[in-house]
Length: 91
Picture 1 (cartoon, rainbow, N blue to C red):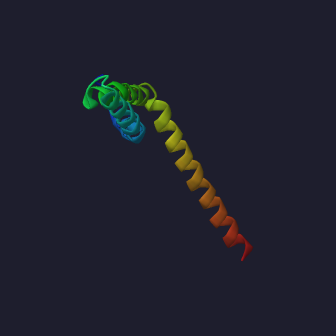
Picture 2 (picture 1 turned 180 degrees about the vertical axis):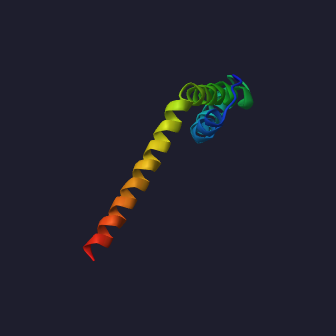
Picture 3 (picture 1 turned 120 degrees about the vertical axis):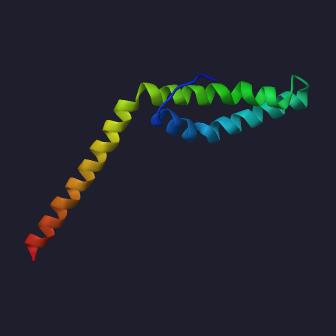
């Protein structure tokens, strides 16, 4: 599996884990049932590329993800402040 460092690489990798696990179980089970290979080999063949791609995405787009989250949080906070201000003016 490709080695990358960073918070977003880890976060996106964790988010993709359920899909990777499901794909790994399906491929590993199929391989084991049909005699095409061992379960663990099939599991890794399906799961590892998904996790590696997700981690690479997190690394490649970390700045955009951070800006999007911060921008969304700032917009939400700003809307709350304006809403509260307007509510107090109406009283």
